[in-house]
Amino acid sequence: MNRGITRVATVALVLLVALIVGTTYWQVWASSSLAAKQDNAIQRVAQFTVRRGKIEGSAGKTIYATNLRRKVKGQTLYFRKYPNRGMLAQTVGYSTQERSRTGLESSLNDYLTGTNSNLNTVLKTNLDRLQGITVTGNNVFLTPDPRGQRIAQGALGTQCGAVFALEPSTGKVLVAASSPTFDLNLADKPNFLPNVSKIHANCRPASPLVNRGTNALFPPGSSFKVVTAAAALDSGLYTPESSFYDPGYCVEYGKRVRNAGDPESPEQFGTLTFSQALEHSVNSVFCKVGIRLGAKRILDYSKRFGFYSLPPLETPENERIASGLYSKGQLYYPSNNSQVDPGRLAFGQERMIVTPIQMAMVAAGIANRGVVMRPYVVDRIEQPNGSLVTRTTPKMLSRAIKPQTAHELNLMMQSVVTGGTGTAAQIPGVSVAGKTGTAETGNSGINTTWFIAFAPADHPRVAIAVVLQNQTGFGGTTAAPIAKTVMEALLERP
Image: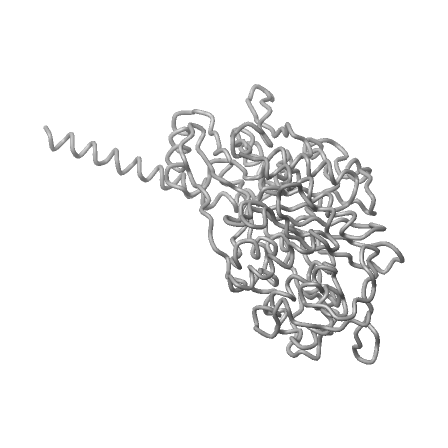
């Protein structure tokens, strides 16, 4: 009797396991190939019978993506709705009825549809299907601070640019604002692209679909001097007190490379220290430093901060791009020093172009005593019942510079804000370390402006990069005030 029961139980268990393995294969490992077949009508309908997981703020009070339930020919289908419209739009992305997806809606599609390979999700999804229950995807919780994000987006306004902020000790993304933005709910409307093309900003094309924080490259101007200074100090060739004479220019290849002529400081300084050269953003000094260091040493140090690699983030790879030298549209690393102008590279010219996330990583690495943490925007993923699927653990990406070098740079960057080109970023009662940047665009009087910073300088909680396109001013007058406003908001967090 017991043997018979045992046999039946064994057979039932084997069949259940076979069923789970079979459905898991088709729904998890083979689902991507099925989804890729645009003519698979059953697949197109089936995806909307799944209630996609929500995308929320880390505290669960801000909803970035949820579902709209509709009855279509007697069948219950679920379509996407974005309550916060344009906030964090390029990072969250969209998922449409035509199955086009961007941002986290694309890269985390398996989690959001319950087809990820985590065992607890596999079991739950298959049991729901066996019982005829609507499959509900996992909920994704993001790290950005909603208030800081709103303030950053508001500060950018109709300017083309981005604000990217990190927590230096963990790599947690606090703000990822790209401007102009767009209403994610438009993605499923007729004439989506024509309507988005009507969005105006201070650049043409406005390109609101582009994530300027991770997938757009800009000349860094003098903000790159921080990387050059890191190489100069860490290599032992210079100290903050190293002395220079500035005649207002340096000579490269028989030509004079002049100082920027920032109206906040004179064009010629005479005798000054390396620290003062950073404080007042003196091109001639960094030109000389670059010639002595050589281009490859500067670029090797840039790699330590993450240059020449895709910024590590959970968004799709095709929505991130590496910073570095570019030649003919391709990332370029020289085989010898003679292939790059080291003087101009040292103060952020030559062919160097960067993303805001990369420059935020530079600021965060200096703030974190020389250690660059891996950036992340996903705090955790939970099943619909609240049980944990996965949580992001902070990870070290690299050691860029020695702790002593980071300390020296910290002090030098504080002087930029207390008495140099970045005074507009001063926050009462808070020590701020920063660096301005102003890159010429080739159009007379039109610049790309930067400000990178971290605060409080003695115990950093926020590192930030702000970039603005088509500016008539300098980084200290255009980008620094935005960085100040956003940092103040983030520092008020509990």
